[in-house]
Image (tube, rainbow, N blue to C red):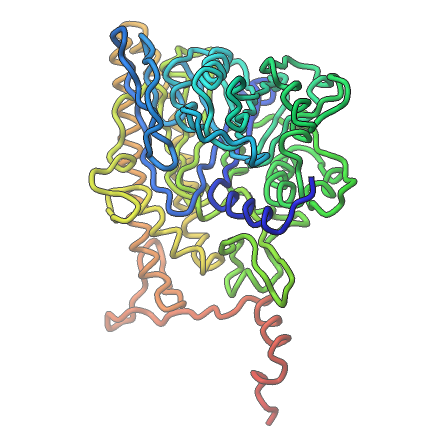
Length: 545
């Protein structure tokens, strides 16, 4: 499907608003047998708390209002379930976790008359399911009954035993058909990912479980988008064919994740996006090494380092080697349409997490959302247990919102630090990284003892174990934001006026008379000074004496 520039512009704006990333590691692919799934929620201007939906029982006839996740507009009402489960963030009390990335697909398939948007579908699925399979059944039946009003979406749906991809699109307002969908179980021992490009292809060739809507293939036939045999049907080629932007801005993030765990040079032409005949990437791969939470967190901080897509060695990195680029992704120079790379770690992330799901522990203890309220590279992921019913103040701060700063709020304090760091990355980031890694290492070091105590409590009093873990999550969150406020103040003093104040043993140095010691002035990086003189010629070269 050839794209016009107008369509490319639309996709550019879509990617601007919906530029999320999900990474998946099945339990056979992890060091401890956890299922690990990640999510970046990316959108400029997006401010979100750590959401919470308490468990409840509901009277017959009770209805639930569908409030659009993006616009907060009401789409109407559906019947409420008789029982709903506790949800904290994107995990529920049964260790079901659901994330998403928007891929758009064919514009004519969007059904604005549908009742349920993608965000509502995620959180209703979490409130009503005990397993990933049950979540798929509930989400698809709701969409088939009430209509789906969002663009094409890929959902990651996981529990302590399985991880699935569910892709879904509307039927453009068709009165008889409301939605098409396909769900694929990622085989155990494999890793997978999606990042705003439909990933499910010719699913008849997959050696795993596949579930589809009854009209999955027939709807494409009815529109003339597919004419071959059923076994040859390729979901994404019919409904969301990858173009340059879908590969370079989206699948490249998947390629980079895979590349951390297997040599993916064979598929670099696909990720670069220019070769229309390039071999498509597999939906999943077998990693060469086992993964853990720290490795998944590291992948959420990726900027294509060490690959052909790396964001270093060009003038856009600025004086201090920043791997971040301003948006929009697309810009024009002398009539040429140009673009920025879009790595996993991006300044527009509102929240990011790694969900850890463990089958061998009591469910209230086994599920953790390692959560951060900003770009994953710029936060310490804090442990939030799936049984938590009370949120830390920093992740649910009264009065704070997208236009109201609060130094008690994690989104704003983390952004305070990260926005100082972005333009002076190589100068400031090492200080941030030291604090970030110190906090995370302390969480990992304490995890075994914390959970052993929780299990001891659980044996006699489940409520006491749940409260203990909730208190622990709040304590670590409070400590994190206090440390981040301290970091913000430290950075202002340490790096004031593009210079660096010397220190020793954690204290800034002073002269014998009590003044601040003379600052250090690091100046340009080697790359930038050479590039500056290359561009300016002799203008800044001093005359020889």
